[in-house]
Image (cartoon, rainbow, N blue to C red; front, side, top):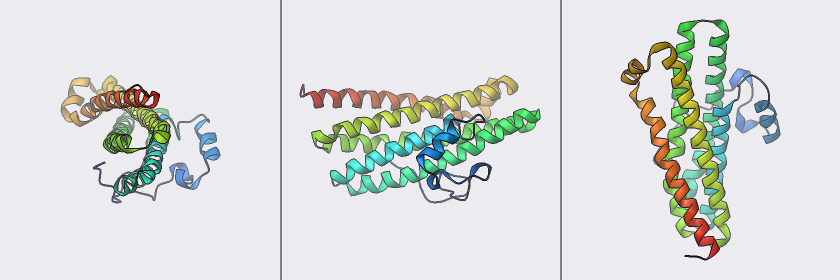
Length: 220
């Protein structure tokens, strides 16, 4: 994990935000948050759910790293878990703003909100991509009894990446329908690169899971 987790306004570690005046994800129970997610409105929505999945993956990495006595991995994973929850809140805000712009019928506000939502999805994807190195590291070092936890972390991380990628592509699609794909690729190439970058990490996660399954079965 190489990301900078120092607090900066508007980023994953900006803890001043609570969507629609609600309490941040870190201050609600799991039951309360799931109930909010089940309600119509998209605040939170799929992107925020990806943040919670990423937080779960990071928490599992931290737990396994503590058993493996990988203090650096544990520290980074704990920081990532908190950043992912903040990212979930930020994505919920972006989703709410995009929905409001659509309802208002304001084309400029819609495009600005779609771009903000795309950047939020890209930021979440970047956090998730950075987690793969530490997950691979602890997978090589843990005892067999912890392999299932590593697979669970890989599955949660894969889900977070897949959801972030899907949301990013959806946001870009919304922009392309109104502004033209070619122009957007020229002005915001990083967003398309962010979506494609998820593919390689997902492939690595699938390979890691296969290798762990082989090791757990005693076939290696």
